[in-house]
Length: 95
Image (tube, rainbow, N blue to C red; front, side):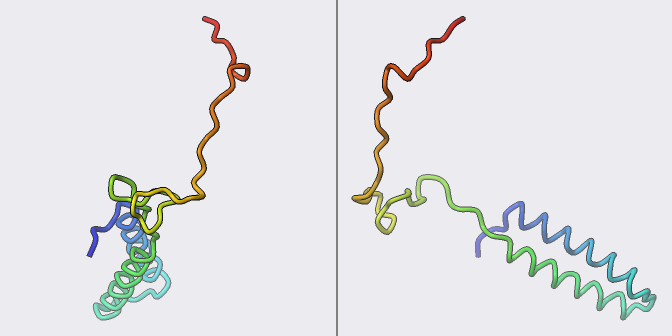
């Protein structure tokens, strides 16, 4: 199982805290069993939110390049190559 990202931890924690406070205020429960049920529900909701946050796309050496065929590192036949810049389109730099 991959490690959770900072966004997943932040969203999950914020969901647990906010949902616990909201449910406690709305239900106005004061029994231990009611508080325990609300806390369990808030933890489950926070876990659900943390798991549904989209994972970031991989960047680095092992990430597939755009246009790769199945991530082999070989560019596809339709890969675009930028055209060289024209000398007339550049502006002189004044100091």
